[in-house]
Length: 203
Image: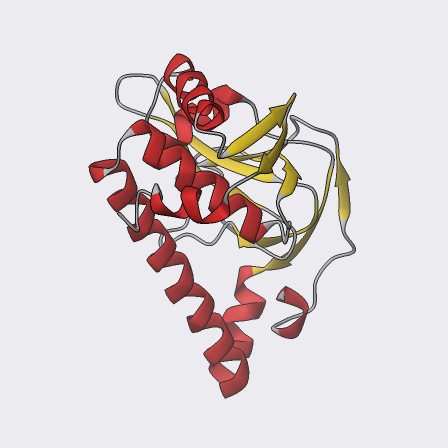
């Protein structure tokens, strides 16, 4: 997607757990996941980690309203990441209406996703949060009903505002209802409609 807006660098290879940029680093580049997964996170006022998002192949991340990153970005697993100077995209957007339209569409989609996530955190139960998370990941990873979650239960907990123990209990509840099956980090959705009825944003 970035390549449609401005010249991008050749994808760089990262191992799992590598830092792409740190919180408060200068936000001079915008990034696209070519392969693998990236998480963005920051430390809250109480010192606890807050995971803001997970980014999969085709997703863009790293654009900030100010000049510094509000979150750090780390790879969840081995990944390839392309990047582009933010100034190049901004110049192209000013000169090319098609680039500007795509750029603003991406910004609007990102804002909508952030708003939906805040709504999920505010109103859903733990089981509803996990149901929504699994449906979202399956769709974004272009999976059918079986897919692997590269992130840890701690990552999921910090993303959904839960404890890791609560995440484990919610997975157990979904297995007990025979809505999903798990094997390690592999998840199989057994009853799609049943899981959708528990979706914390659809409820």
